[in-house]
Length: 230
Image (cartoon, rainbow, N blue to C red; front, side, top):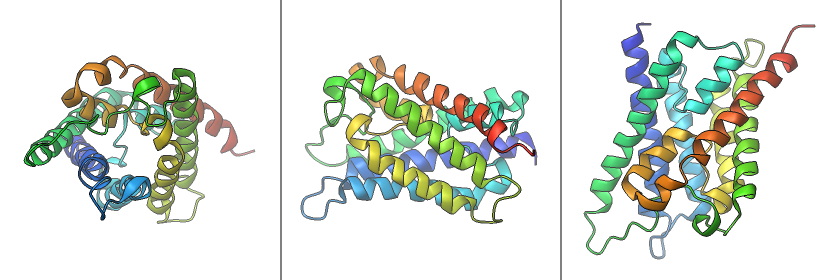
């Protein structure tokens, strides 16, 4: 598959993840009487990855996330030469998804940003969790996400079921950690909405790059040992 097609797939996939996942939070989570709540948002994020994994997994591998690319790189599943281009288009796709969401959301009279599905800690954590709690949550959740991705896509795993395992994993991660950080585990997802929220979201964005990358890199190291042939 050509590099241009891989990058195009990553852009479209990350666009869909941000539009679908963050869109569910901004447009539908608190809608009067019919709001989908935390559970609905969790499912929405899982479904974006599940659907894209089936749609573009055979083209680009369906990373949709700089942390996933880091974990696959450290785990020996991804080429270093492709890493920077993948990360760039993931971030651009995330910003594009947030841009479309912004246009839609601001079409409602009286719309207020209210965080615009941004990730945060301290006073900007949905549950008021500290920086340390947010840091631990993001590292551990991303670590487990990458362990599941690396395991589900192992050549010895049941064929064809990886998208289901990965989509359900992201759903579970959101069910656990939305109250803590609004759940990132994905620097591109965090960057896309932070660009439009600005202010505090941009000032706290560093953590939602550092923690997922650390967790993903640790998972890459651990799975190289865990999944190695004896």
